[in-house]
Length: 296
Ligand SMILES: C[S@@+](CC[C@H](N)C(=O)[O-])C[C@H]1O[C@@H](n2cnc3c(N)ncnc32)[C@H](O)[C@@H]1O
Image 1 (cartoon, rainbow, N blue to C red):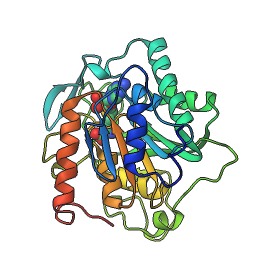
Image 2: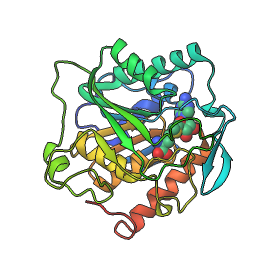
Image 3: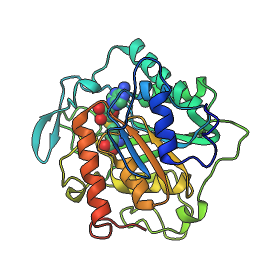
């Protein structure tokens, strides 16, 4: 780590550091502002340039490895479950190696008191949970994100999948992580018909899938709702924190961080289309922050 990269670094300092910290290839963000940067690159490559113990919070929504040519039902229509090439399984062993590589790198770049969230369905979440334990993270919660409007099951041969699991873990067992207990207990969560006003927030969150207002600029096939990411950012980061998402997708983590405010965000995605979608969403929010988004 260069001497000049101190606690008072600016976004510019870290982006500069990342671009120079590689002998093979210069990496430049595809987009950057004072508090928001996007890399159109492999997150492993980008993370390898980060200094150790640098990031306050990571939200990772890795490929689900569920694009297996099956079908699901959407708005009454039968559609393929395939999300894209990035979501194809390469077999159990290769998938687990992939998850282990990126989770290990996340561990290196997180501050000791930093936390990581990993979301997924049963296709990938047990592998990720096992690896968090193997790599000595300290599990804090496994949140069940219940989707009250999940698509019906077409085969009628098993239960309708209507939740995802979001694991929350701290890097260091002994460090003190940040948790905004008050905001979670007393905040307003109008979308959630399980959360009772002024009572502790529990580990089952009822949040509908993203509404059309979050898909104005196109949609990502596994886009998360802003209500989910706003809750995560608010619960686990404080003003000034730096948040990293290695699988940016449509940029929900970055938009939620910007809505909450006073956070720095860095996201990576291999796919240029998703980077462009994120830029559109971000610039729209910056232009009219109060029109479409509830910021509280
Ligand atoms: C499950 S999606 C994330 C969706 C995102 N949370 C959202 O709300 O829009 C995973 C994303 O990871 C990207 N991806 C897959 N492998 C990657 C890699 N090695 N480096 C960077 N991005 C990757 C895919 O292009 C995809 O957009």
